[in-house]
Length: 324
Image (cartoon, rainbow, N blue to C red; front, side, top):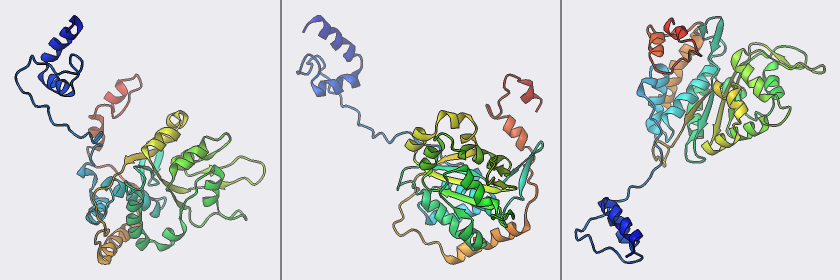
């Protein structure tokens, strides 16, 4: 044994577990195991690496009517709780129209939610989550489920046309539009093309609902459009096709992004009865008909948000957070 091998032997003997593993592979001193250690040391069992664990949905999120819907469906579905919840909030928020809102200074934030559901193809049960939610919403408003759920998001002009009304200039009778994009990656790829106006139109749809194209021939214009967007995508596609520009210009910031995975294995799809679905629809129908013009946060919500580290960025002015 030369000096280099001797030093290596001494270092390895300081770590018994490492020595046992290496000796078993015959890597010390060529191909022969070391004879210096007479004590038999068993190598620790190998632990299967299951990858990073994503955070579980806090049960606090499942309150009110939305929580009731999710908790009723979840035992009978392979879908993820977070996917069920956010599909429901986006779908029901579009169904009730442009009425319920929160007021932040002079800006009204309506219930038109943008949601990106991220998960593996054929494993995350993204489509299953939406189909379960749609089954409930269709019982509340069948015309909405039939006519106002669309897909094929590819251009800003097409999105405006869907809520702009007829060629005679008459306003659309129904300004609600729920865009379900099962392949959101294709939309992100289209947005990267030069001259495509989809990204700014989507951002304006989230902000104000006033959409227009400033062109000389056949201009498009829509007021009070109530557009919600739900897109399904894999994590690899999201990393590949969401450009740095769209991450920085506010497009991605307008979406709620949530990971989805199969919650359980139900080969027969559960046993959710028609009576339970009808009961949920009846409960939600009452609230949809009543309407909620202004939604207030519960007392203490603002203070609780300020108490969370990093919840609000002072942008170089600490007093703006300290003074509320």
